[in-house]
Image (cartoon, rainbow, N blue to C red; front, side, top):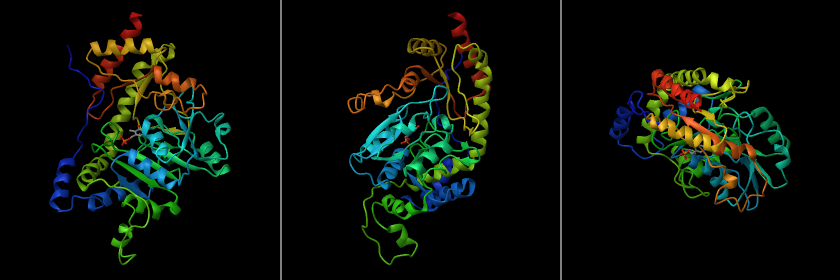
Length: 379
Ligand SMILES: *Cc1c(COP(=O)(O)O)cnc(C)c1O
């Protein structure tokens, strides 16, 4: 039997371990040191994101965004039901009511048609999730946010190096959150980043980041002593984490080139099945330049998906489903307003993710595509 192909495998691209040693040797292993600054500078120079704050996770960054949104209990936040729990939890922790919206028919991202009808006088924010690093319709979302005076907070966990037209994802909303979890395109074990694109929110973001103190301003010499000035928490990652991350960022171009090649081979390899209507393949809107974060297929039923997972496993290939639609989760279904969200439910039941990571080879992809094709031939 050929070797097993896991769904994901964490990878090294260059100097990760060397930089982690260097961070230690510098004698500064806590947060906000040299490597943290280099990571921030990378995003500023490559994407023009000047308000970056590294965090220990994207969950952290979303929690910071929710704090910055200054929500009062009962305030409403609109987001897709087909997303990770952290997107919702961050706002639930602040007492907000989550208003879940449906996904599109041709892509799991927020369906914009009908979204405006969910906005009430209590709505404070919309949180689009760029699923698979493929842009949501940011022009229309920005127009809605402006019209109704709402915060636009991008869950860009999966979206590094994805674009909406010529604008990098994570650089569009008032706030955005990235993840560097081991399953993402760029990794450091656990890690994330808040991007503050609205300059008015920057000073407070930095205070929340530094446990509610104005320590950052103190180290810049802007105040002569620092103290407790607002709420906050421990959101900074250590320099060891930042050092690892920086080495990955140095190789972002190579990582992205490899992933895009693999993603394109999947699309070519499965095109016949897609054209024949056996499988739904990802459809990338004209305004989106995706970052090859996920290659997914959508089966006709959950039963078919379970059989396909089994079939692949028997050939040593690990494929995995994704989110449970959150409006139907054990925690939230009693709080949800009862609207059916058929597309979110369909992706929850039928979407399957195929292996995609830096060390995967084109031969692996060919083998996976052949195995999927054999499954549909057999039926
Ligand atoms: C991975 C992910 C998160 C959480 O990221 P962590 O860094 O693990 O906290 C949040 N939202 C989405 C859409 C994700 O894919």
